[in-house]
Amino acid sequence: MTKRWWVPYVFLAVPLTLYFIWVISPIAQTIILSFTNWDGVSTKFDFIGWKNYTRLFSDPYFWLSLKNNIKWLVFFVIVAIPAGLGMAMLLDQKFPGNKIFKTLIYLPMTLSFVVIGQIWSWILEPRSGVLNEFLRAIGLGSLAKPWLSDPKIVTYALIMAALWRQIAYAMVLFLAGLKNVSTELVEAAYVDGANACQRFWYVILPALRPAMVIAITVNIIDSLRAFDIVYVMTRGGPFYSSSVLANYMYIQSFHNYRMGYGSAIAVIQFLITLGFIIVYLFYTLKREEESI
Image (cartoon, rainbow, N blue to C red; front, side):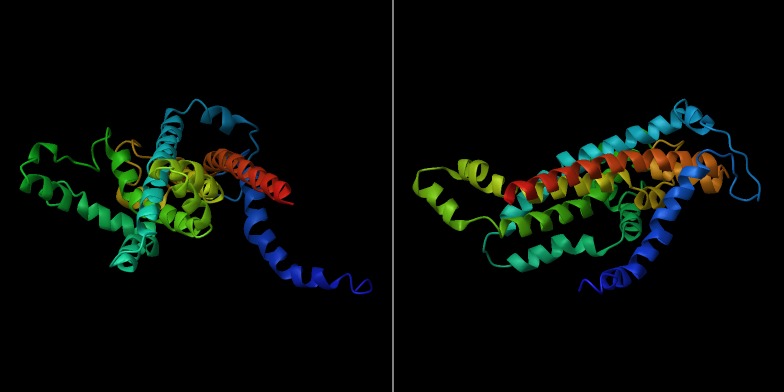
């Protein structure tokens, strides 16, 4: 093996090359373009230094998009995580139809956000959409609203549609985590007189900590890269009121032909996401060191 030290590198050559071409190279190109005024069409561009970034931080629509991303993040954590955990705890019990309910709840995970966006566009359609028709049918017509055209509520309508899929994802992670919970510890706590809440808080929840960390991290990253459902349902409107960073970057780059400015938005989004990934990796490595 000492004479064949090169063998592992031969096997790694192809995937590392592809990774460099499709991941590292585009990231480097985006960072370089963020310091230019390239319009995405012409063959010439000028380096303008930090002007795109200084303009970015004085752009009210950038801050609005970032604010909307924070709203996505908050709801993906405080709604999707507890709801997914609750469903996992419920469906981890044995009862008739258990597998059918798991399949039905997991079903949105098999759909792309584009398809989910189309489905919820029909549901939230103001005149004949399912939601407004249902509210009128039960005598709550006053609650019927133009969900996707009112700047005050459009972001929350999009988040509601996205949560339909995201809760199912959190549920699957917690169902997997519950398989690692020791039944002996739960039974011992029951024998010692612990009630259901105490068994959950002191026995089950600590055992679910790895699944919890993964679920929170993935949900945060998903909230920061939200794009498909926003573009399909509202295109970021009305008046950028539902825009998020990825959507605003796309509009600036491909609609307004400001590729340099769009690249600066992408770099900021990348750095924010990278920060959460580093925290997750640090936590994971720390736990591995403690377990050794």
